[in-house]
Length: 210
Image 1 (cartoon, rainbow, N blue to C red):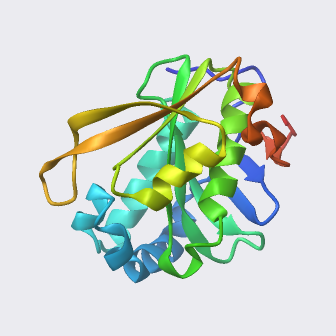
Image 2 (tube, rainbow, N blue to C red):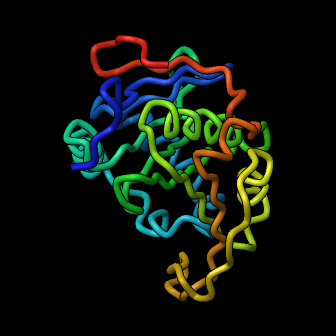
Image 3 (cartoon, one colour):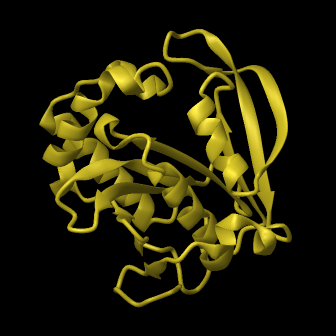
């Protein structure tokens, strides 16, 4: 189990335009609609999109697993919603695969909301949660070098391009692709643009942790 700080993990995060919260199985139909509408947009960059569309039953099972892993402190996957929580705008996460003192942020935005700076808003919020609530020492963002929109996000937030690893991730076409590694360290975070993100964060009981 990956433990967060005594106040965490953050189950619900409110940004200027969005609600970022732990998935719930009740979100299944809205997730399916968002993914299905964005497949052409997602497939070049998201290997999981090659297995879409899936039916509602499969979507519910995935959401149940995501919620279970969240509750057990194994991994932290979030949905991105409008402020009224009527539309699934995308998905994101503070993933634990890098070890207990690090998080990896991933994100996707549905096609009709792309280009509005929402992924940057989400990544800034999760960066702040990772350092302030979870107390990690490092946050990474990884992307395909050809995905220039995605690469622009960590650059805007003060992350450093640490390396480009050759043929390190499996692409949507099943072929290995290069991976850009963007890193922000805890001592660099206070001076980064991400530190200025205006957010509210709440734990599982609805108590404010940030």
